[in-house]
Length: 198
Image 1: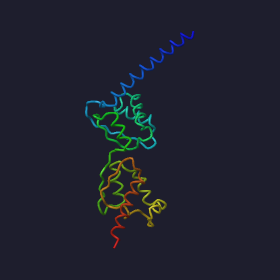
Image 2 (image 1 turned 90 degrees about the vertical axis):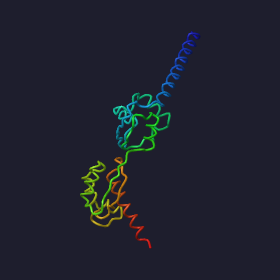
Image 3 (image 1 turned 60 degrees about the horizontal axis):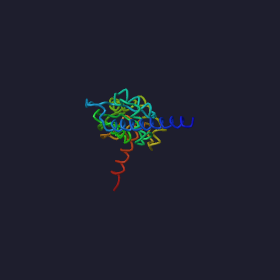
Image 4 (image 1 turned 30 degrees about the horizontal axis):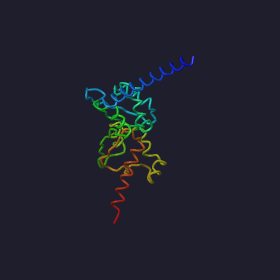
């Protein structure tokens, strides 16, 4: 019985060793191979709070992940299970899975240049930003008159009108409507401080 058990154990260990070797070889090849040879660009949106398993599903649906198990294993191996950032990404299929994970971990997402000219009304600014799908227009217009929101930025007026600084902004769709409005207000406040210095 003991000899039989030892034989079974040796067989199991041998099978396990073979599996590890084969899997490691597959993972190494997968890591350094391009997603495909079509050289196409794919847009992917990862929402805030998306779990790793959901991220893998999204990437699979976009044909960026052909082998979910290998991809997940690579994410774990790179220590990136908790470092993937939400946002809109632009991936080229010539990337390797390893490079794709690096872009997700670094937050190398797609940004939009949006120019806000001098003299635009709140309504016009909201329309311009919503044209890029950067904000919720209704929320933007509500926040523009929200006293608590205005006070949080040291605005004592009844409206944000005149506090959204005209300029060209680099914005991403991962930003909330509130965040974008804060960026514009704080930018204007910084410029005002600079010009008011003697």
